[in-house]
Image (cartoon, rainbow, N blue to C red; front, side, top):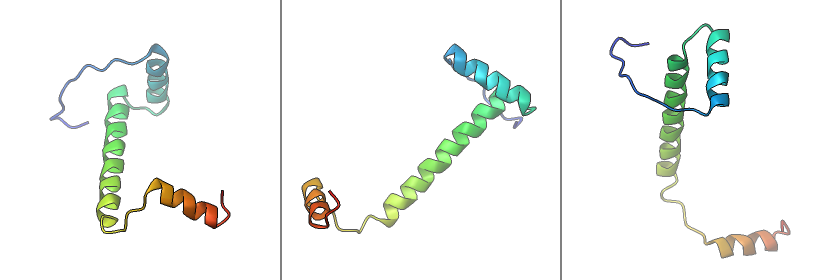
Length: 77
């Protein structure tokens, strides 16, 4: 963990906390490191989602009704 870490209090359901402690012990790491990595993964996913949205910004929009009609015309519903 970075020496420039910040402290924060996080509350978990008891069963989640127990699972985190077991995971940390079995992977020879700390609960804090597990949480830090999980948050980093979530932020990475958000960044990928934002990139995908940006790349698709110029695609034509279709209403839900048009989508359903198209699926029905193609025999998919």
